[in-house]
Image (cartoon, rainbow, N blue to C red):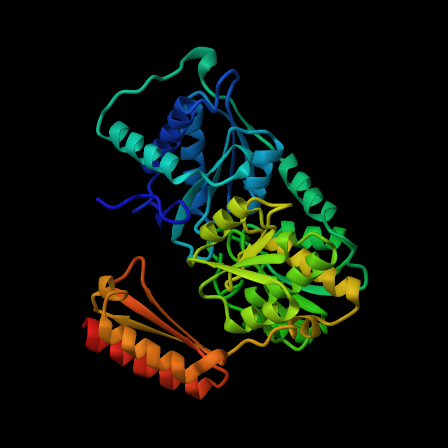
Length: 452
């Protein structure tokens, strides 16, 4: 039986993989494990529960709230808010845990449950494992202590969460956005109200698309994985820039005034230089992943900023930042973490900081993002191979070495076994797209030959 918790909580098709019974059981288990860990010692426990607008979030929220209250935890229901808002409110309200119901950029039928520890930080893997073990024990019939009478949890709506979170976002900006016109694509998701409100309070003229969630349309043709409508809207409205979120708004991608995409690496580059200028980029270092574009690495080297790279996944970026004391990190996909102001990727905060840099400098987003040149990147998935031998095959090592010699300092090769599928990902970057395709094709053939 596989592990329930993945890199970003528990996810699956709602009411098939992720059922109401599972949501209730995991919530009860989380309450018991945190109680045993001493988190609730000396006080009545409190949880913050939020969700994105998916239809399934309605019954899953009810199940989570029921589970927590039945285990003696008081619940503050904050309703539809972004994942980073639930994390922020968990810390700001000194709650003992937070729970977010979302499947991020996944299609509408999916949903997920993510738990946050006190302070709004992701639960440690060890605690997730204990929650899963406890959940399975309860599901198999093992009894658990159930409070009665005044011991059961109380539940109330916490509608103040929206204003508290928006005020926090606007309050951390270094300058206002007066004079900027911004198009915001809310992906019909959790930021549909929050992001436009935050930008407007900060002084921007706001045009919105993808901000009419109906429970069924989240991520459907809008958001950070579908930029075409935002690109067209920015050009049509002659806006200075566009901001795109995913379903739970922990990501941000941008579009410049010409309609060109500005990805997570470019956003990181712009923010790194802004933070260094303000004396906020601790150790003059930014954290990325091994999938960060080589152009980002070269730009940071030229600008005197060190790039530390981790395995793929914002959780690994965050771990490195917390361990080493860095202030900024993120991924090409738009997960950007500004650790002084957020404990997780925050798409609205990222977009606001990016817009603030445009406003403060008077430069266009295209000009600012031009600090780095995105080198052409080709990715080929090679299926049905023995991915466990990627690092041990001498023939494959020789093919990689030959490719690296050909590319020299202006290119890069990365072979990465998939974490979930029987395939190997071949990624090649080069100054020329034709060269990148040629080298990637040869390496894909080498992977098939050596590992097939």
